[in-house]
Length: 603
Image (tube, rainbow, N blue to C red; front, top):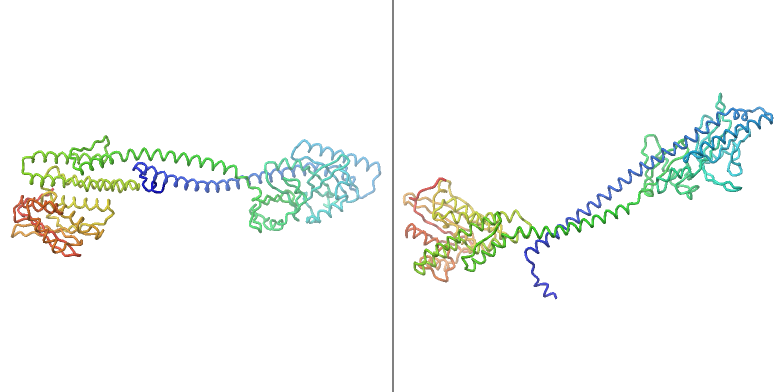
């Protein structure tokens, strides 16, 4: 099984699909995790804002309820019967009974009026006068206070300072009672009664607000919320079982209760709580934030499910788009590679066919034109001698350079697999421009600048396709750049340097091109020098001997040099051509001699 896995080969399309899918999947997962984290933070912020709004709304409703109850009890404080009963003078029994009846009727009216509201329903009203009189809607036996003095003592025990001056209505206690058909759970508030002229306290009104009324307010908040007095005792809560318990951190919370302070208090354990003073100032609304944050599990779960769904959809779409784009992108390139491979195998009848209009298609058309020229040349030279015919045919084939084409296209395919489309485009454009200059519309002579440009493209192809860093040092003066030379005279010399001078020796070789004009001898000398590995003396002598031999030997390895040498001699005469010198491990210099009487182009 491992042997089969090692021999498994993927097509180019499959590799593109695989690589693209993995990259997109990784990117999608990264984005999904980032969005999850962002949304989680957003949920937390939103929940916090909603919680603040809900608690403030509850605080507002609770204050309104307490103030409504206080306003209802105002009817009692204004009752003339109350002034009669609070008089220090002894009353006739008949007067006391009549005042009691009138005050009891007023209290019952207030209680029945409050019953019409779900949020301010009064359970009981008891009045304890300082002179000992009391009027109670609920028997005092059910309450922990049965007189004026008991009420004052209870308030002081709860931490409320009873001043000689005015004291507002204080909500500070909770009572539960049951028996004789009577039961209830109440939030208790006390309101002092004052003598009109001296503001002396003459009694206290004790009001029991039904806990069910408060639960109706608390229902908008599903978690913990407490009404607490200053000593930490809970007097009302969303869960009635908490009433009577104590909050140990109440003193720490009260340290934050100052004018202008934030409603959010920081607890000693690092958690936070909302703190709002309620009407009357004797109790506070407390809401621990961590305990009351809305449950995010459902929202996060829904988000996670959607994220997974969209991730799977993205992967499926990515695979499809990768397959489609790879088919479209590599269609022309694969055809061109197949055609060049056939040419490399000797089939000059192979042609590139495509319905695309991209750079690869343009390159294929140009290669088709060169192949047409090769075939035309082959047909016109059939009558020549076999040696000459073979020489010229190899010359034309070297212009196409099927090895360069094949290797460059293979490199382009690999670069595309790496998703470096800009580099692949530059490589293919350089290849197209190289062959465009090599073709030169059939012109045998081209400006020296074009030949140098062809070398630049050739080195760029080597650098992009093979990961090299070859460099051309162009020292040709501007006045000689228009000098016309035979096409493909310098480029084969540079290619020879790359293949034989730099290969397996260095990846950053430099080729220097310079010229020397000898006007007295009517000669222009072009120097092509590289800093490659050089040539052994015995090999250099053998190479010089081979350049002088015609026709070329079958075992000849420097066909490009041989080609340039004999084309120059055939065109300009035997006194012109190439001269070689080299030092092993240092350099190789090729000197190319041309006649100076040629016309210079200024295009």
